[in-house]
Image (cartoon, rainbow, N blue to C red; front, side, top):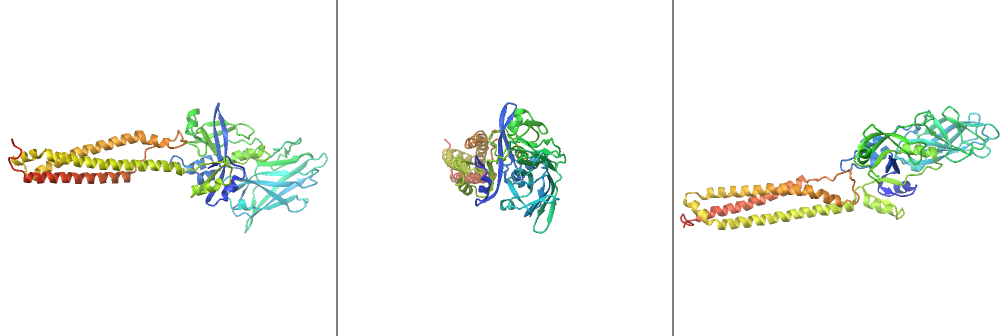
Length: 486
């Protein structure tokens, strides 16, 4: 994740060796009931392809489907290499210039200027353009979110209204030309300040302009009416849900940085944390909703200043990207190799400490068994005098040591588990620079390693016990019946 960079960041990152995917992410402040938080807007396809599972606490595929909005926009078929737009013109002395705003599957928005193919006739005018190289390699779908119409001076003369109507959009692949439906309700807006803004022609496919209107932006309505209402689904963090006592299906109302009214959203899910959010109180939504209102309001839509990057070489790519951006650009890695190295060193230290403790325990058991054998020589002779043979005494001593060592091993396991549960998660969390409060740090047990260590300890203890028992048996065989009897 790269934060605080310029509008051309996605193009720069995409061209970096080792980068598989790069997607823009819009991060805005969230204002809810006097509390502040973060809005993270990303393409659902980018969420599914780039976001990690955060050790099983986040399901990118399910979240991507939960926030997906059905965008009412023309979609170019895969393989499109050339596009053509036909419009009907009335009372235009000079044809306007037209460009289309196209967004790819990961949310990168770009303006494609269209070239006028010939002088307008009674049927209207035709415009066309080749698909640019940066879009040709971008993920699908490619959607037309808006159209810019620039009206030259004296294009509309006198008291008459100029009228433009969209009639046909054609996508041409290497094999066939495909008609792209223009059945949306197109809203005429004037993002730039002008005395005579455009007005709708009532059909939803065009507009009327005055002689001093200089520009129009056509954007398809979300609800196929002039109201352009939408209730987008959002995923909220656990912290936000607890702070405002919201559940799945509840409504949240909040403003966007560029929007006509407060946006009424529906909670589609609750997760421990929102990826890429600078605060714990955050929500995730479809980037297409934000871009829709940016296109309706802003003359030049603000490009996202955050980028999500997918790569198998995070350290190498981070080094390469660092050279492209200013020093204040923040680059965060989901894998965090430095943090993993710290935690990995702690794990190695714990294993080394456990091995040393095991060796010390074996030395202690061996020394205790040796001292016991020496101090109980008289007992061996007495038992031998009353008829208890070497094998019987060896069995008794083996059971004694087995009971003591088994009890000690179980007590050690319980004590170790208790200490680990109380201290290891806290120590591990302390090594994380900025942990999410909503995501707990759970103790993970290496069952294979623990099993191997226990097996090695049991085998070593068995060898010590066997040596001690063999010593008891040998002593019993050599002992005289009256030895040790006073």
